Length: 569
Image (cartoon, rainbow, N blue to C red; front, side):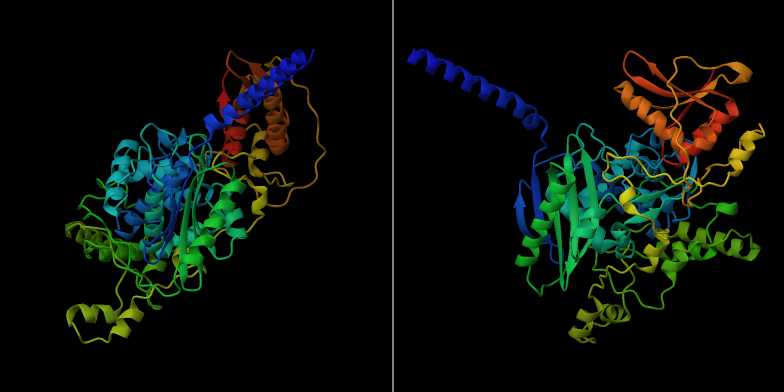
């Protein structure tokens, strides 16, 4: 009897252990590998590392390189922040997180930069890459060339946004190096990474990194990343007093766990970093070739209402005349009287001044005739440094040291203000993370919009490139529960519809239909909700619409960063 009891207990223990093993196994299988590095940003000294040279999936940390190349193109005069980008089919087809771009849509480069840096929008990053490189493959080549120039020897890029692709790998060390270059090579744009919200042209977006920025004292960047293969990644940076520290984490298990780990690593960094340190600028490990930015992009200098201001062309011509040294110098403190950044990014009103246009053409010709720079252009040197370069020994060392002191501040710089002049709104109402685990916020006006009046009068839909929704507070509306139907009404020519997504369950599809109907009650008030079951998914459709109504509804939903496709008869 005793032996039987022992046997029974043993069997139950064995079964229990097996159940625990089967429960934990999937987590172990899908858990992304962990890696971390802490760096003194002033000197590049490594203060802590774990698996820092293991090649892993960087996810949206990739966008730091995309933005780095965008800043480089602007500073070299190849493009401007006002350059108008035509969205490619490749960019428009990228999965979330998305700004909501459509193929053929035109949008200014500044809005793409905001969306990629703040919201981590995959379509915006891909649009930047296709614009600068011509296509995804060419831009990946540019990214890899620049990575090698920065000393990122274990990194291979395959796309502009970091979505999982075979061979698209990097390391915690390389991403820390890249983060350091983003800070010091282009400080005039760095403050975009500390913004909690931004106006991205067709939508107001919130930062995927805002929780970390709000929680950690001194934090001002830089970039989050998430995919299933990568886990939760973050390159974070903070400044306290004279110290600036960069902490990189790959393979976090959640947003909260990742943020807590980066905060812990930053604490380690601030504890170990000396109060005073020699602060050499990050050095290019390889000399950049003259075609670092690839071939000239199509439509870099815009004309007509979308053209650049003459001041912008002047800056472009002047920067083209400067040749960068093989090593990147520490950014100089910008003189207070320098107006070039403001001229570069000012929201100038469209105008047609014959004399100004003639000057712009002449300056453009001068820029083209000037030999291409051999590397990334450094910021303007101070008069003391220029004098020291021409007459050695004529300047006191203290003057030189003061001249090269890096003026790092969390206060927005004029250049960054042009990148982010957005109205403030509640960021906690907008989704966090690259995977958009929540839904975007939609604010509906109670006043009928011109588009709605147009639909009521049965006129042709507006032909605007982008239709923006009003951003005034919503008026309370009585919610109506509609029944999900199985057949569309085709009376009166209403044999059109729209599709707002495919889902794994019928419940999820019905939920999306209800939410969309409440969100766009004006455009979808007469439409019928239908869940269509296919072999692979449940499709959420609105049916019983006119062609004009369907196109208008899709335009409004797309402007709200919601996927939408028109369904014909």
